Amino acid sequence: MKNSLVIIGCPRSGTTYLLRLLASCHTLGYVSAAQNTAPNKLLRSRDLRVFNTPLLGGIRYAKRRYEHALPVESWAFYNNYLPGFQWKIDHGGGPKINYKTEEIDAFRRAVDGVLKESGRQRFLFKYTDFSRLDLLYQIDPTCQVIHLTRHPLSVIFSYSKKMERGEFNTWNEREAWSALWDKKLFAIYHEYKEALCEKALAGCLWAFFIRKIKQDIRVWKGRAVQTYVYEDLFASYAPIKDLFKNNNLTYNLGVQSFLRNNKPVVYNYDESLEKYRVFVDSLINYVE
Image (cartoon, rainbow, N blue to C red; front, side):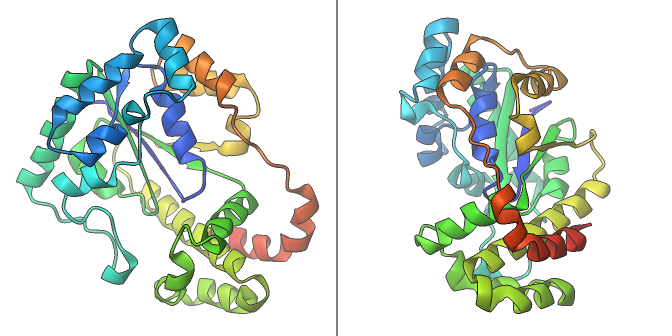
């Protein structure tokens, strides 16, 4: 397991879209939906070979056919080899970092198995919330890390909508989350929670995770972390091509097909910004 490519970021920052985009170049191995349901059955990674044909494979991937072979945020796979990797708010404290050597070795062997069965050269994966950079360095000190950020209002609106629809249980966990914050962030939340409800929680979670990730990046011992802003990255094809070049990836027919069929959504919040400006500014000041 060498030169793996890892995407980190706050929830609702576009990390899933970036994961699928990078995987569309067909040189990166990853945990598919099928593999994630059976972490120990590494033969399932052979499903990725359905995308190997340059043109037909790109079309299949872009049309989101063969859903079982598409990449996912593979919590079940992580947890199988690194027990407790997926941190739960009711566990208290923070993410587990003290793994046994044999557990890390088991994860590396599993990744090597995924690459062997899929016929790919490098491993691609992503996770959100905490950066886990300390653990990542133990697993693969040669990895390249991409930190994807997004306009806070984009995150706030998307995150809060998931809460309002009941798709995320975060709103019901708001007291547990706010208990993790320092006095300054808690004061911001207390000031806005009655007026903004889920949006106040989403905004403070954005600030909490972004600040933690930035702190981790400052002490990161590996290769320089690449930070991209979602809105800037997907403003045109040029920044995307630069990202591929910076990570030694081929901008091939599969990638082009994916972009044609799955255009990234970039919202303009100029009209909403004035309404939320004071709240957003307080969050940005906290992060910086």
